[in-house]
Image (cartoon, rainbow, N blue to C red; front, side):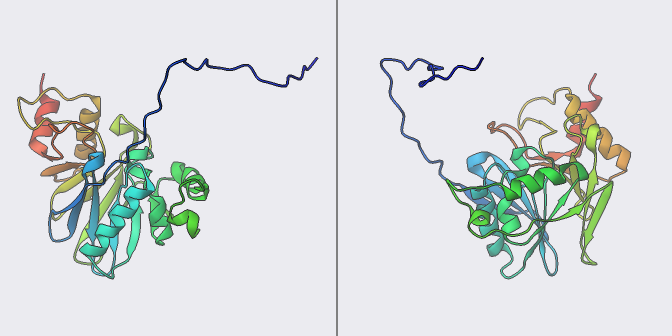
Length: 255
């Protein structure tokens, strides 16, 4: 009963009067903040995002790269300035959303091992093998094999004098089942993606379920946290990216 037609009917009628706007390229705006002896914050201001670079004796760890391969390359360029000659041994991402994983392909090209939850491994493999022929990135131009290591409950990265701990908080985040948080005992710093929204000015408001979930996860892990770093501050400039833990606690305890 099939019927062959030579021309498909238009799905949308083109307006009689229309113009196509010229695409405007977003200008990159990158700066580096030294948080402590071992921790650097790469501010990608054009996307309101902060990637965390951690320096160990012989290598580096990069946590989170948002949206695009171009952002990944921008972070790598800053890493070269932070610690010339040191390789990026690991790349880790807070959870599978593109704000944390979208720029990971250049790290695969650089030979970094990607730390991941079991449920994300197949997705990473798909992203790493994807073709980028229209706008080729480094991994398209020079393909490399994806290397991964699985995070179950937690993992510790240490060179004997400095440590970074990565914890799976999952559904406690009230956000994603694969959600991770990073913890630096010497700084009493916890890093998360987009769970805590505390304004720079004004009164502390009652925590939403993501904030409350993250707070409880920290308490359940027994972590001594003084400061929370949020990687994504959205487009709002009135959101803190460095949040005193006592303010998070206050928001949760508000009635």
